[in-house]
Length: 583
Image 1 (cartoon, rainbow, N blue to C red):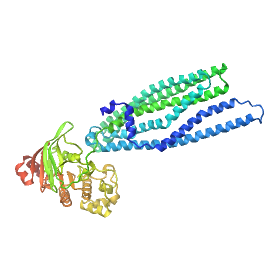
Image 2 (image 1 turned 180 degrees about the horizontal axis):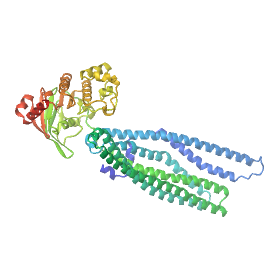
Image 3 (image 1 turned 90 degrees about the vertical axis):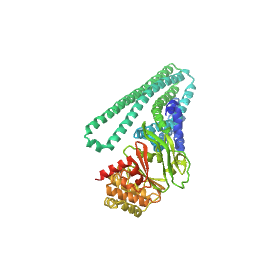
Image 4 (image 1 turned 135 degrees about the horizontal axis):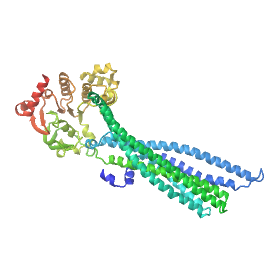
């Protein structure tokens, strides 16, 4: 990330553009329409000036015919510019929407590909602002640069050439004097815009993250009567954003003032220079009309550079923030390898999280087709082991192998397809019961098959009462209880054809009888598969081939239930605590 900040912004910008697919045909078409409009705007003042050179004496003279011809030409040019403007605007908006979508796709794909360590190092909710707002700023600038800027420069260059051919150096000088006035104003306003926009976007990101966190846990807030405190806390973030918006509004007002000045001063310069030369007889009326007509459009195009500069300053900060995301580490690498014997081995693995040692010198072997249980108190490191197996994190020391191959050498997607993962609390997403069951499956399942597994986990009746497989479970599966989510997660696991099962306290939200029934169901359907189970209820894993006992990140015992209950004090303590809880 430091490297991204230190390198020039234009390099980050070019790198960012290379990440997306540009709608080239649309950009070329919009560019040609804008170029045509610029050519028309160059022609119109000369045609109007041509009318001033005509001497109307006889009603039916050729002069009248020439005037009519010029008027018809002007009408045709004006109509062509109008139609070209509509077409250019429409095509430009389509191209901008596609570019914005492509930028968002690149940013969101990167976010979802980040390692868990990179995601945890930041507030994930802040990524929302980067994907939605910052990508829009970059898209606006890119469209203006590719579609509008070159026709704009073409008009400006051709205007200077035409004025120079009028034979009076003062006319050309007046046009040149306009440039520094507008450029200085654009530089000044651009700096103000960059600072205010950066401050505002950071404030929006913080407010979004804070509100999302509080709304997600509103029940806890109400349970502890912290509503007013949280409102006051939220007001602080709202006030921060309000202050940032106030400064942004002031910057916008300043930019409008600059724009008005940039229009008035050049107009004054052009009119004064032209009037002096006209009154002095140095230029003709026709030349003055052409000069003034070109000057009006010329200063508009120069002033439009203020828009480009402002867009550029907005895009500058946005580019840096998006580029920072693109440089973060993601899950990738390795080769697709065949797994014959699903034997997993930890060799002297250590891991720290947030500066705290979570695992210390952990070694064990999970035999192919065995039931391997992990037990221990809260914070012992049980879930961390599963996270390391899934490669959400990487060990600081030691290595993890599968069939004798370091798991980092496996292609990550094919590696994770080896596992059916049952996380703690069985989180879900907005959608239907069918979506919940089929999530990550990769293969279609009939309603009969889904209902059969719902029956196995004692959820069929509850689902049918609520409308069947098409029942909407709500955001985060909030319409389901914790136990219902766990039962559905188990049903999803049973539908999976993965070689190995990772279960992280998969029945923690169930009662004693329900927990034992689901544990037996997993054993029946996963018989012959390698099962690694983190258990809070030791009675569900006493038949495990191997039980690993953890205490504060260290292995304090490893063996069967019979071996450990006679030799491992920590296991004996866990057994006693479990028996006491049942009573």
